Length: 472
Image (tube, rainbow, N blue to C red; front, top):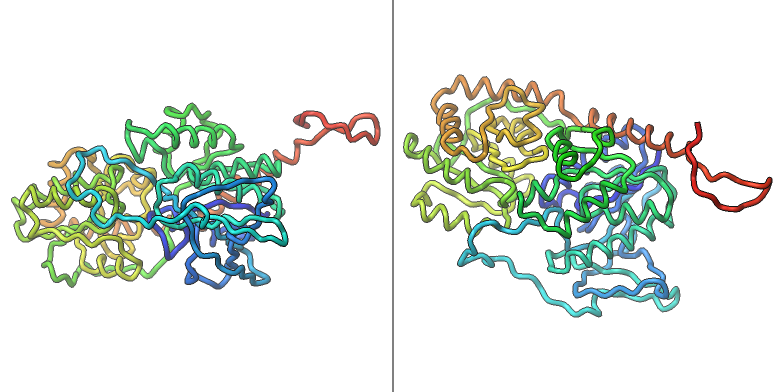
């Protein structure tokens, strides 16, 4: 089995759980004999090596006489690299798009643009023409520019070319940014398309959906031969909000990369023994406002508790202002975006991890927290709660219930230890090999069905084309 897979990020450079999920799933598929041709937005040169071969998709030539591409961003062009005998091939397509795009539902902050400036480049810097081959390379910026929809279209153009240059059995596209590329590859190759939904526009923006993103999602879902949802929570949204038939959607819960489990609850922290952490994108979807409001309530009972908000996002400036407004800045620490080694240090000092997401399709971070020896509190509006029946869950909007759950765990060490032990038993059953097996089964089902479709040849050796028919 060979799969053409469109992703958007690859560790160590990630902005959320999408890159982590793609990395875990791809490696487990490789172990099960699936060859993956993985198209990723941008590589930085220090991605994990080993079984993965990195190929720079900026070097994929687009016939100049067929495509005219204009853009206002640019990046360097890396030289292609190839290592024979690898199961996973990664093709780089630089792009400024983020895997998740949110618009703030809160008031305009006086420091909204604090630390969020982007370089300006000329349109001509976006193109590189090879005069000998008369081909054009698309050099995307890799920054978070405003040309969102144009970049999606350009990514699809490269996807078309990649699908022409490679052989494969099935196409697998992760989330809305890659759906147009997956559709283009299907139209070019005739191969079946699977779209993998890690989040929907209703998760990211509530009822204030971006109609352009919604339309891209809807077209991808309608065009796909099969859909993989990361939870039953997500499947329900696809059925109720996008009109997707239930039988078209397969639920495959995410996993976690196995690491050595920690059993000690002793934490070494410069902030004292009671450290409560929020870790994730600081966006509407993740519910940071409810974490801050709950912190205010917890401090009434535990005045020495300390709260850490780890991550970056469009609501970070508003959260800084909100903490200041509540006069709890002395008990709060904002870290900004963290890398893997920095995250491990946070777990070493954290007593409780809280995920108050408004709508969380799955949520890999709670699994990583439990691996780090940290018990968790989840919102009921999360997919990961489906596979963690012993976790404490509260409605994201109920700040008093959230504060009460935090206080109970801080007050009773036996409860904290029980939650930690139950959590580690549960994640022992959640690994990427299990997820990959389910995805592999979907590949088999869809390719078998695709083989049953063929073009009927009429009049002996005639090559007259007719519409595909379903063969028994």
